[in-house]
Length: 202
Image 1 (cartoon, rainbow, N blue to C red):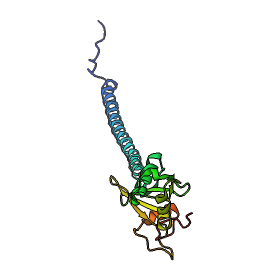
Image 2: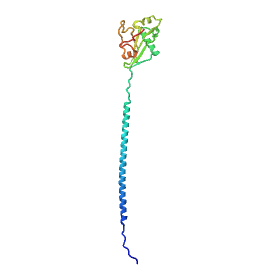
Image 3: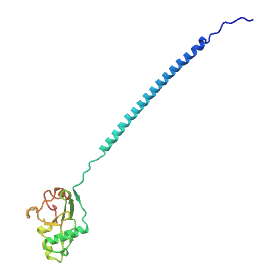
Image 4: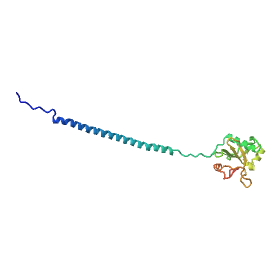
């Protein structure tokens, strides 16, 4: 019979070491994964914070830009207006009525002496004009002399024209202005300060 052999151990030392090595590697891997997850979370938080920080200045700039983009606009209180045919007819009729005459006693307004404006501060229309008398109307020719040589017109918005004879107003031969014309209107027309007619009239 052959020689009897001693029984072999159930586990060898190198087999027993393998699970230990695998466990150690697994532990290292879990640690690395944990560290990687923490790093990713940190990076995500940092990126999110950076995004928030970046978006805030943009929003602030936008608000600031919107606030500063509101320019202050000034609306003129006095406007020079066009003298239309209808306005001419109104002025002639009002001037004729001042002398108890009719529009047909005049041929119209003398050229180059008509002014027309609106003063928004007082909601008033102002006009200055000289009426041209008809050669066939002696009363109109007489009325167009001295104070009647130039007329000042005033009309509240929605109202009727008031007429003032100011041909000699403010001169040594005449009296003071019968009405105060707003300074803005005088400046717009280039009339003397405190006056009520052009400095030169024919």
